[in-house]
Image (cartoon, rainbow, N blue to C red; front, side, top):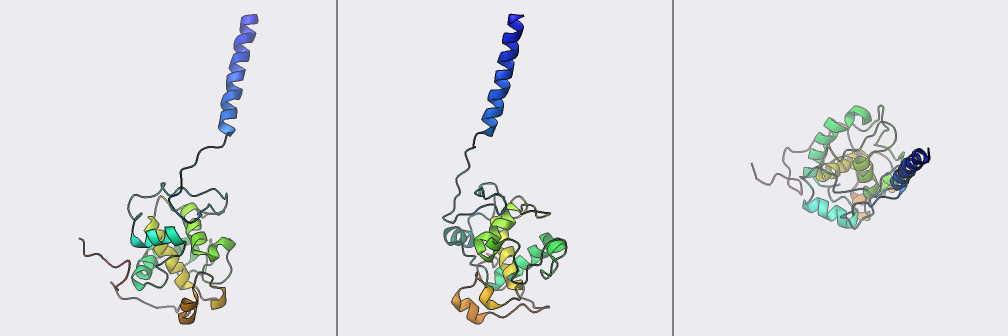
Length: 198
């Protein structure tokens, strides 16, 4: 009888120990960014190593990770690619011009998550997902793709320029709202232009 109680007590103690270890904070992978990128819902740091292997070290990605500002916002070569990715990966929920469907509209000055008024916040939403049906895209888009998509979302904006916190003063002066049917050349020069590699 005593051996049974001892064995039962030891088993119960082991279960409690294992459960307790599971509740301890876990080490997080260091973020390779000077910008504090956090999950919009949980507030946890984003694990930037948990991405597709390509598109992690382009000049645009490096600039974004050091400044938090998306260098693609006014670059026609990036907007063209961002539009194509947006139509394939985002328009089913957010509409073809960001008007909103089952997901919120993205073209006005109302943001479900106020962090999305910054480039880092909008990137974090695309990377890590949000509440509702918005899942993370870190395993389906490269970091470079995400920057191109967020640049396209910024381009779709039709709200007051004063509310476009992601634009600097010079960009605000040159700002013109998106016009339906607007097009770009097939391969305009810029940071996202084809490199000539086949």
